[in-house]
Each structure stands twice: as structure tokens, then as C-alpha cells.
Image (cartoon, rainbow over all chains, first blue to last red; front, top):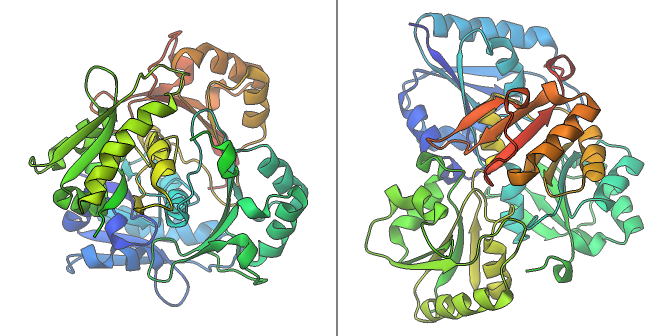
Length: 235
Length: 235
């Protein structure tokens, strides 16, 4: 019998923010795979590390991690052959995914190669969006409000329009786009409504009002949350 | 020493989709509170039930749960006095929240009454959005795509504009608005890109292409996910 491919959300960074379900699967699968840079450690594996029993076959899916660039198809084709061989031998394979597998995760590239062909199960995880909101103590949306999740790579005009028309906006992948986002918020008069959050839920977590964050560059795993000011949330 | 108030995300429905962190807190807090209808059971408590040690003080925060209506402030004021008394006595209180506390949760009403006044910690949870996507096997967004989360209560024109301008849209709280959403998607020619998901991750979970869902009414805890068609996702 063929094995099951799991897309396993391991949560935003704190190893304790993994679900009981993902934890249970990690204990019993013989093979774990995870995205990794061409050299160096995998963040997804680091998050799951305390929960790994230590006797598993590991597959590091190494791709160039260049902000704004996306891996070539043939990289995933090669890893998919390796994963398929384990499934064919009846071994379950868990692909570890930072946050949730279906929210900006590279798991989609693996998923696209197996969906409809093999047994695939996705275990949802705590996303970085809600982890950032928790870190900032910033409720996102309530009642009939709209939340928009945008990559910071959008052009300034598009960003401005989307932030202006949403009760809350999560701007992902801030990186080198921090000045653009800052300028957009200043133009909207919304700087005071914005939080800067870096590495949410990790030991290296940093949370500050965007007005207090003056750097021109931010890490890739940083986010800017924009919310309606307190008086408007209706709480 | 005053107790800590926890906003505890218990996840979308499957009790195993609670985090290790929330589980650990549930084991040790002397007081749990949870939203509940005026009569009958609390969904948040039902999700957490297998994990409750059974010796805790419980506070059911009972409010009228009428779709589209929101509870009066004085209801939360009264419960907050009860919660504050426990905190003053040095007892930690965990408020159980379906999904994530800061995404459309009634925890915000409690949070607003304690933030800045007491020690408050929010434990993020798996949201119904990612649970619905996992149930449908439907990747939401990748690369530089935009995700919009909207309540189905928006008027048809607003819904149409937001769905048209997003790579993926999660339409929450479908309930009696299902026909409106269906009409909007038909006008956009996007019916084939939409999934209907009810009670994601629960035993009563139902997932089907929206085109196969003909009812005029849906439960409150249902969602319609709209995504770009397969050819456009770039996977």
C-alpha cells in the first residue's frame, strides 16, 4: 500500500505552536522533508526539531532562496521523484511547512505534483499572520470587517488602495520594501495604526510601533500589521 | 500577585488542531471561560473538552448569538467583573476562542476590557480559513498573490470588486448570504473556482465545489473559498 504525503504546518516559530495533530504525525512518519536554502539550516526543520524522534530519513528540499525570485520547476521535479519513491515503498512522508502549508508556503510546489495522484493530507497550522497579531496584542478584525493579506512587493499605488479599503491589512515579506510601505502609510495618515513585527513567536521576536522602526531594511520574515485605530474597532 | 488572562485559540474544530502551547495552558489554569449561546452548548468548550482536566471553574459567557447582530457592551462588562475577581485572587483565566482569538473572535470584547490593565497573553490558533483550505485541498496564495478575507454580509458590488481583485478570497459567515455570493461568482464567471466548506475539520465537515451546493441557506460556520484556477497558480 502506498504511503500518505502530509503537508504539515509546524506553525510560525515557537515549537509549542505546533498542533497536537502535527506532533502526532511527526512521531510516527518514517520520512520528513523540508524546504531549505542552498546552504545552511531549514527554518521549518528548526521549528520541528524538538519534536523529531531522531530516527527518520530526512530530505532537505534545497532551493535558492532569493527574495522576489521563485525556484525553477525542475528542482521540485527532482525532489518529487525522491518523495514518490518513499510513498511507493509504503512509507508516509511529512513535508514540514512554516506556518500553514497553503498560505505562501513552498509546499504548494510539492502538492501540485502529487494531488490527484497519491493520498495527500494537509494539516493546517498557525499562520504567521495571527502570530504577529498575538505578539503585537493587536486584534485584527471583528464583526463585518475586511482583512487583506498583501505581499510588500506590490507597487505603492496598489498597496495604498488596498490598505485604505480594508479594516486590517497584513503586509507580508517586508524585507527591502519597508520604506515603500512606510511612505504609503504616511500618505494615508495611518502610521500610528501600524505595528512592525519580526520573527513572531521566536526567541528573536521584535515588536514595535512602525513609527519607532527606522531601518531601511527588514528581514524577509517580518510583517507590518495595519489596523483601524482603537476607537473604531467597536469593542 | 495578579493572575494572567489568556486568549486561547483552540483551533477550527478538530480537538487535535489545538497547539501544544494552548494544551499546556489548559492543563494548569484554574479557570476557563468561553463564549456560549443564551441556551445550549459552547462550541469553543466542545473543541477543548477532551483536553480539560475536569477540576476547573468554568465561566460560560452567554450572549445572544444572532447572525448579523452583536452583543451589548453591558453583557461583557458583567463577565469582565467576574473574570477580574479571579485575576485579583491570583488565578489565571483562559478564555477559549474558536480558531484564532484575533480573527473575528468574540475574545476581542474581553481583551478590550483588560488590555493595559492586566497581564494578557494571546495564544494564536489555527484559523478556520486555513482549515477550510486544507479540507478542500485548495492552496490559497503563493508568491506575490493577494488574499482577501471578507464577511458574506458585504453588499454584492463590494464583494464582486474584492473577489475580482484578489488571487484568493475567503468569504466568511456565509449563512443566509449564500445566494448573493453565488450570484456574484456567476457574474464574474468564477463559480468553477469556488469551494463550499462547512464545519471544517469537524466530524460534520462537508466540502464540495460551490457548483454542486444548491441550498439557499448555509450554516453560520461555513465558508466559500475562491481561488485562481489551477493553470494560474504558477505551481
